[in-house]
Amino acid sequence: MLIAFGALTGLPPERGAAASLDSRFGGHYERPLGQGAWGSGRLTMIIAIDGPAASGKGTIARRIAAHYQLPHLDTGLLYRATAAALIAEDRNLYDEAAAVAAARGLGLTEFDDATLRTRQMGDAASVVAAMPGVRAALIEAQRAFAARPGGAVLDGRDIGTVVCPGADVKIFVTASAETRAQRRALELIQSGEKANYEAILADIVRRDARDSGRAAAPLRPADDAVQLDTTHLGIDAAFAEALRIVEAARIKA
Ligand code: DC
Image (cartoon, rainbow, N blue to C red; front, side):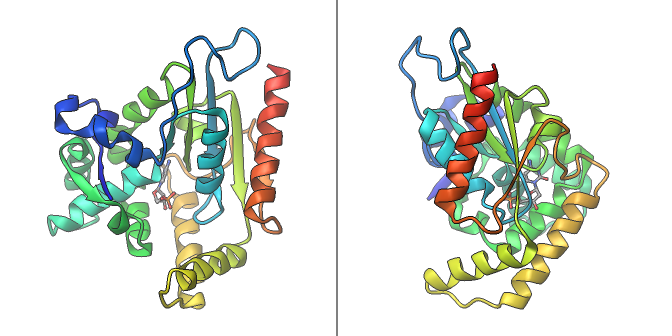
């Protein structure tokens, strides 16, 4: 599946981005006009879902978005695509000026979803994501996505703290590193690939350290985030718990 970023980065639709929006975000749901997903009188609902790699936040975000018929943005893909653009041009991953140019140019490029979602690309993404210039280049597009009429679900590392500090609901999804590595290994085995548990665990621990230890928008729960530990939860139970958290916020609103 090809992914284009034009619509997100504000480039004109003739770039083909509008057509690819659905595939890009894993689902874009239209709500009938005038029907607010939020409580009475509220017409927008911005849901921020953050957490470390392989915590389950992406699956939870997709399911929450489908449940409320809201558009969903997997913000990790932006950092993955930035890294992919650098790699495709044979540029040094640590060259901040080149990384910023790559982030700004995302709207002009199409990416293969399978390439973006590899473990190696996740690792490369976490390198460019530590650069303040790259984060600055990507923030407005994320905020514009969140500001759509009706709201949106965004998942990432800094949605509740930096991108949408005023989000209506903030969920911080965690799970032990060992559980996350087991889940990743199982996913690979189920898709017919080989899985090296130790290598996956090392990768997760390294990524956690980089994402949490950086100065620019480090991975951390917002003060008003509800923590959801999925270590002992299957995906259905984790989704049910996330839904309960959103519903509790709706009642309060
Ligand atoms: O969620 P993911 O695994 O696709 O993210 C890949 C990397 O991108 C992650 O290690 C850190 C970075 N990232 C970020 O810094 N901020 C976000 N909002 C999303 C991802």
